[in-house]
Length: 435
Ligand code: LLP
Image 1 (spheres, rainbow, N blue to C red):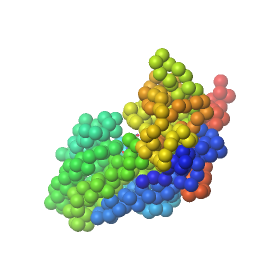
Image 2 (spheres, protein in one colour):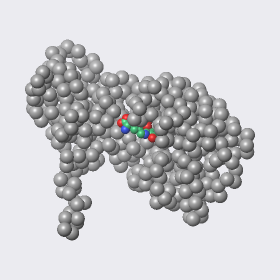
Image 3 (cartoon, rainbow, N blue to C red):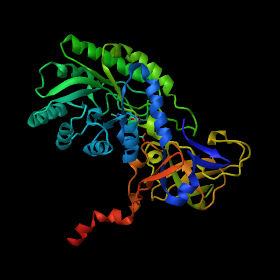
């Protein structure tokens, strides 16, 4: 379910050749397919149709303004985790009453901004935060709508430790047994505690994990209502899967959605509004990273391709050991008809390490990866990079962050300019003058 495919050995992004993008904009370059983004929203909407959720796209996965604008036009709300993301969402045209605000460390400044704009809901992560939201709402003479992010002590064994959030030993959410009293009517003067939020990890490969979390939510909702409290919103977070293993596997969204909707049916039937916060399920397979081979060097016992992109450009392999499909954008050597890397099997491949230019041993995209023979100047595509690619890029080693491009059919737009060294230095110049 994407619009990246090989035509006569040349990778195309929708109707545009990836090589021409690399030539025109340089590398490293993030490239997004507009139609793939739209298709993913449609697939989610279909998968979750029985509970008709508000889809709040997780801005942290890929927050480029043009990406957000496109998703707003597809009817998405936004899930933000900072004042910065809130301003991004608003700048892209998101309606405030479609924005939910999560995160364990919301500052007073950011809470105030969110209240002034009239966002849909806070997802509060602690009693202390709830008290702060209540106090600030009081100062502003506003009412705050709040969902409690509960920590249900539910984990998915296949979610990486660094991004598993539903277990009791993580910093996230309010431990389930502490939640009930916070819903007591009248406990807060300016906060309406009227929602439950869970986000159990990213990604969550097993739909049974959602089911376990939703069961705990159902119990809590029953207890709250028995005590006279009111819950109108149930937010099950994000973590819905994307495809990383191949460049063409369909997203298993339909199956995941069916299982989750079955479990949510009771809450939906009782009039609760369902919210989901997908990030990667929308953006991951809608983006790729183009990088050029700077050198092919010979190590002790293997070849090593050094790219112009590294952990500064795409952190996921170094940070999580994440595997991404990597393939040259121009690969005329293969015989037969094929459109995806997964279908291309007949080439004489060479095993190489694919590494970045950063001065760290961990700056490696792939070890011992079979690839067609590479030479200096070849452009490679790193697939499934739309989520947590550019949004986690840094300026490490004083390398500016890459440009971003959006392709829509034949149309190509640069949606973020490449950072220059002048950009990097500009924040430090004043300090230099002061010496
Ligand atoms: N909602 C909340 C409260 C979250 O914390 C997150 C992600 C999401 C939704 C969206 O999750 P998604 O649908 O994208 O899986 N950098 C890591 C992932 C970190 C996820 C953080 N929170 C990675 O590259 O895999």
